[in-house]
Image (cartoon, rainbow, N blue to C red; front, side):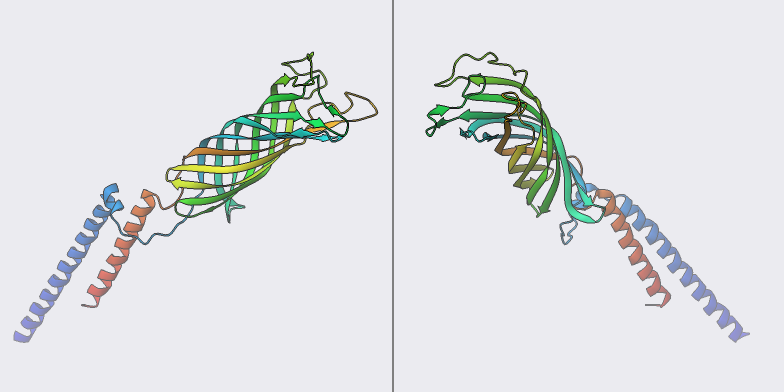
Length: 294
């Protein structure tokens, strides 16, 4: 009887001790889950995590302003000089992402720009003559452009290198002519002649860099464009002797861009998910240790 009583007492104590440990484990688990749910943004900011730059798929909207040099490529060749134009302003929207879902550092950009094209003929010593169109040595055209560009970017923490290549479409809104020294009165001083074309399109590309202060970026870039649309009908002067004139130019611009989505790092939801995962892993370790009596 004494042996039986001792066995019963020992068994009861063992069961009671195990139940208390199990209750403590369940309480700790419940408490830890509540703690992870109640983590504040301020507490998340204090977590010391080894940082690694991971660039997300993200979107930018920005305002770009620049100035540049414009000239025309004439065929047959006509001497003309570059014209400084201080007006190139536009709104852009850029989407950075992975090409085909797995190739990083790519993107696409479009927008709308108000810009200008211009030519200014120079004196030709060989022929002792300055070429003119509509009795004018110089003309400046106002143009609306819509680009469609593929982007390449390489990001560092607060700096990025950028390249772009693509095409554009545009419409020539208006024109202003200047007679110069040898010119005279034009029949169309501030309007397009019937033979002049107003639809514009061509190729565009550029290089630049960005200064990144999340969620704001400052972009500095140089772009070159070459129109594939001649400014006049090729046979306007003669049906046997065609002439072509294609605008081209270089623009240096600066812009401020705003991130519409997070550029890098993990979101608050992802951080809380990782915190929960760490709690569960620690819980499993504690349970394993308790089961082994450690």
